[in-house]
Structures are given as structure tokens and as C-alpha cells.
Length: 71
Image 1 (cartoon, helix red, strand yellow):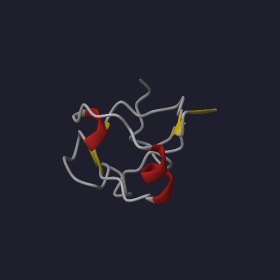
Image 2 (cartoon, rainbow, N blue to C red; image 1 turned 120 degrees about the horizontal axis):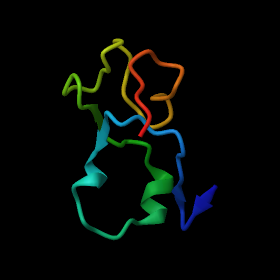
Image 3 (cartoon, rainbow, N blue to C red; image 1 turned 180 degrees about the vertical axis):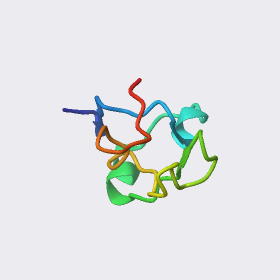
């Protein structure tokens, strides 16, 4: 499901964080569509790698990973 250029992700790990959670600005759908250079990190490791050693990203932090915790 897409809403105003934003992707709605229903299965989100409770340990994923990203800059947009802490910045209170209006999203720019054009900039969002052009760039996949988001910065995500894991609460558990405080790095861009999850406890399983894989990269943290909204598309790959899913129930298939051993460290995944549903919201």
C-alpha cells in the first residue's frame, strides 16, 4: 500500500530505528523516490548490523531474521 509517496510497512521490527523517527519535517516524496540512502540502525547493537550480523534496512528486517521482534 502506498500513501502520498510513503511506503507502508506492516511487518516492522521493534528494534529498527531511522533518522526520520527523530526529525519533525514534512517528507518530500520526490526526494524519497530518488534516494534509497536511508540510515537505519539496530537498537540492540547500536550499529547498522543486527545481532545476526546482517545489515539493518526496512526491507530486510523481517520475520525471516532470528533477531526480528514484531511491534
